[in-house]
Every structure is written in structure tokens, then in C-alpha cells.
Figure 1 (cartoon, rainbow, N blue to C red):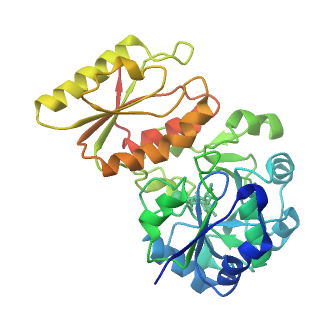
Figure 2: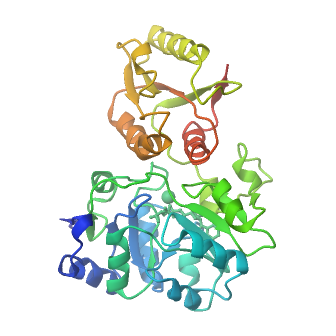
Figure 3: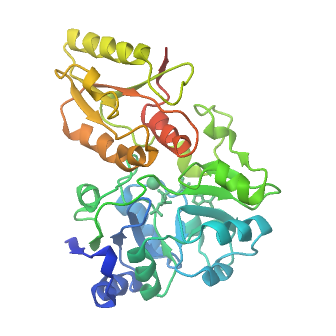
Length: 358
Ligand code: TXA
Ligand code: MG
């Protein structure tokens, strides 16, 4: 299959530019497109065969359900059995935006889309290209992140191309995404809303809108054999770079700054790797970059003082390390408040929970 690329200016989205990708989606094809979180790999969410094509293109286990994306809040009713009060409040507050909610599914949604579950994940994205494309396609669009299963989610069209060239019909290039981490997922089918995946709509924001929110126990540590995450996708190894990644973390955070102890430990670990004939990489931040010896492969994620810069570049940096010849990566860590909750969730998974506390 030949994969075509079209570029679209997010600030001036024209229907004529989106007519073709919308038509491809309408006839059951696969189109990758930008959202404000990460690039999605879209297909008609109501078409079982189209959903099957998504799983094949990603190499994704078919028990891992897809998120149905809609362009209007009014379209939610058709996909779900009921809209619980918490769901209504959260969609009023955060849609369109980086929030996915789990509802009981209606009979319209095929099990091929929900990985056999009786629930369905739904999100109304905020990106202008995504919204208009879904609207023109005229159907809800199932869209997992547009990466090969297990790799970091794509935050630019070039990442999608690396993973999906030859496997899908089209990539709509809308430039780099704004947030860089996948949407927050909240299950609203139970008595209390439960956070299944942290994202840019933070726990603090959720609690402000609906009161108490539970946190899936699977989020707080490495997966135990008897604990199943409620979001099936969270059980798979994710985002892992080819090199061995270790997070070096302070026992205690002081104003979100990295201590000298962390920097010294990272330097010592990188030096040890070098002594063993292994090439070492370091993931740091703008505030600390100058403190690491230039002999190592060093990448900064952005500014600690502006968490959104870290979120935006994290997956791109993890991907970049795969193209560099590095055996061991040592990374600074981040405090878990606000957007830090989502950042540290992805970094911890990328490191396979390999954390060195100092
Ligand atoms: O930001 C995002 O959410 C991106 C963009 C493209 O919208 N999409 C995305 O999709 O991250 P994906 O498939 O990579 O991640 C969806 C997660 C998976 O962990 C999946 O297991 C979970 O959502 N999920 C989907 N349906 C679910 C359901 N019915 N119950 C529980 N978890 C569900
Ligand atoms: Mg994904």
C-alpha cells in the first residue's frame, strides 16, 4: 500500500483539503491525523473491518480497545447506554479537549472497536483538523495513537511516517502537536469516577469538577500479577526505547528542582557505562544541561519551570534515542503534581519501572 501525505495548516483548515481523507475514512480506509494530544490512526468506529485494519497496521493485540472520537457532544448519545452525571459534568468542562471517558456502550458500537468490552471510550478532541475531519467523515472515528504497538506515541507526522509508511492510506500532517501526551482517561461507569490514565486534564482538575476521583491501583506501581489495569492498554510494555532506561530520582522534591545528588549519580552511572564499553545517553532539562559532560549523548526535554515543554518533547526524545547508537540512558525525574503526573507515568513505563532513588 502506498501511504500518501498531505499537509494542512491548522490555522486555516479548508474543507477542500479534508475531502479526500474524509472520503477514505468513509469507505473503511485508514487515515492518520493530528489531535492536540498525539497523532491518531483513524478508521470508522462503527465498521468492524475498519477496526480490524487498525489492529493489523499497529500490530496491536485485539483485546486492547480503541477510543471513538466525535466532533459534536450531541453524538455521544448514540454510542452509549447512558450519560452518568459525572460524565456530563466532565464533558461540559473539558470537551473538546484531552479527556477520554469510559461509558457503557450502545449496540451501535461493535465489539471489534471495544476489544470485546461492554464499555466504550469516547473523546471529543480539540484540534481543528481532527474536529473537521471527523465531522466531514460523518461517522465516529476510532483512533488509537498512530504508532506501532509498544513504541512512543507520535507527536509529529514524521513519527507516524516512521511507523506506518506502507501500512495505511494517508497521513494528514498538521505540524507538531500541542500537548504531546495522550488524553486523560476516566471511567465514569462506576459509583465514583476512576482515573485510568493521567493526562493534561489533571486529577486536580477532575476533582475540582466532580469531587472525589479514584485512581486505578494499577497506576501507582509496577503491575502485580493479580492486579489488572482497567484500561487494557496500560498492561502492555509501552514507550520503551531500545536502550536500557533508568530514572534517577530524589527521595524528596524541593521546589521541583533537581538536586546535586541526582546530577552526580547520573554522571557516575554514565561514566560506569562508558567504562564497560557501553555508550551512555542522558535525559535532562534546560536548567541542568550544562552540568553534564559533553562526551555523553545529552538531550534536554525542556524547561522544568514550564512542564508543558517537557510533555511536548518527551516522546520525540525517546524516539530520537532509538536512532542514536546508545546502550544505556539515564534520565532525571519529575515531581508528580499537575502535568507532572502524566509525565512521570510515561517515563516510568518507558523505564520499565527501573528507578534509582538517591
Ligand atoms: O490522546 C489520545 O487518547 C490518543 C489520541 C489519538 O486521541 N489516543 C490514544 O489511543 O491514546 P490509544 O488506543 O493509544 O490508547 C487508548 C487507551 C488504551 O490504554 C485502552 O486500553 C484504553 O484507552 N481504553 C479504550 N477503551 C477502553 C475501555 N472501554 N475501557 C477501558 N480502557 C479503554
Ligand atoms: Mg497508544
